[in-house]
Amino acid sequence: QVRLAESGGGLVQAGDSLRLSCAASGRTFSDLTMGWFRRAPGRQREFLGALRWSDSSTDYADSVKGRFTISKDNAKNTVYLQMNSLQLDDTAVYYCAASGRQSGTYRYTFLYDYWGQGTQVTVSS
Image 1 (cartoon, rainbow, N blue to C red):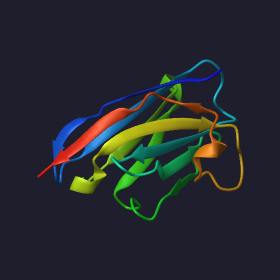
Image 2 (image 1 turned 90 degrees about the horizontal axis):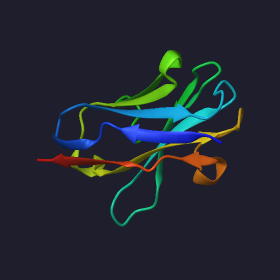
Image 3 (image 1 turned 60 degrees about the horizontal axis):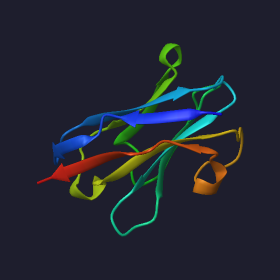
């Protein structure tokens, strides 16, 4: 069983940066891939990026590539989502998720076995 807890959300202004954290517990993570998703009001959950714990390889959605960066801290069992140049349409609930998948795509919600509760990010003008 993997438990995930996001934190770091809040209210920011357009152009600001924010870093979200996802603290993981419950088992070893070297064989997991960690993903970040978001759900904006009235929209489906959207893939943002993923990081494979074993080799720190990453994959990003085109919509956030160059603005968002995923990283990890092995000692803290924590994955981060650094978000820069935030825009109004980045307003959403942000989720981290864990998948046992080690190859192929990580872009679909059904590939993930564990989810955090989400953290709200609101970007104002």
